[in-house]
Amino acid sequence: DAGVTQSPTHLIKTRGQQVTLRCSPKSGHDTVSWYQQALGQGPQFIFQYYEEEERQRGNFPDRFSGHQFPNYSSELNVNALLLGDSALYLCASSLGERQWSTEAFFGQGTRLTVV
Amino acid sequence: RKEVEQDPGPFNVPEGATVAFNCTYSNSASQSFFWYRQDCRKEPKLLMSVYSSGNEDGRFTAQLNRASQYISLLIRDSKLSDSAIYLCVVNIANSGNTPLVFGKGTRLSVIA
Image 1 (cartoon, each protein chain N blue to C red):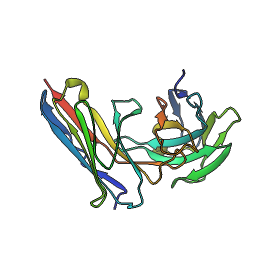
Image 2: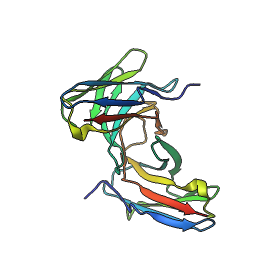
Image 3: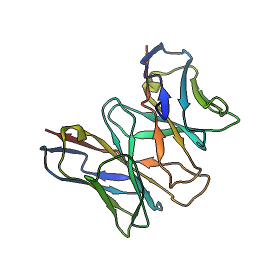
């Protein structure tokens, strides 16, 4: 049973560029959440996708957008990259409507460096 | 006030020591609570959920005090392999469709 997979694992981009990160959730999971973890900080919630719609969003600008596909996989897009966007981007999958079970499984992350 | 606050440490302890981490959360509506462990340059992994009655998993004991909005993690007989960052995490619901709120983490180094 494959866990959460993310690609790529590492990425270097230049300021102003655009980037797309990808995530495949754990088998059987239908909800994908994206988190940004800056160095020395805990992960910060970006947004969550369920049934191909953005259901919740954290305090991130519109430069951050996403998509969920019918197979539940997801993409995170960041436009007009800033140096401050350098971070570990984590994808977490869960069962959206399952009560009493909030365990989220994380992928290994994509380490984005903006230069 | 931060939603979830933790002492960042580092906590440097000898093997075999007992160490305790504390965490406070600001949202009284929080419903579920967790400790995650994160190794260097790796993803967070669930260590244990935290229940109102307190719960234990081997050398690890978690406690929750809803009145004080306080969560703790106790590690007994520390091992070198326990060295990691421990993240305190809360959720305002008991379902998978609400975001997790993380503390900054507490760094533990267990020394031989």
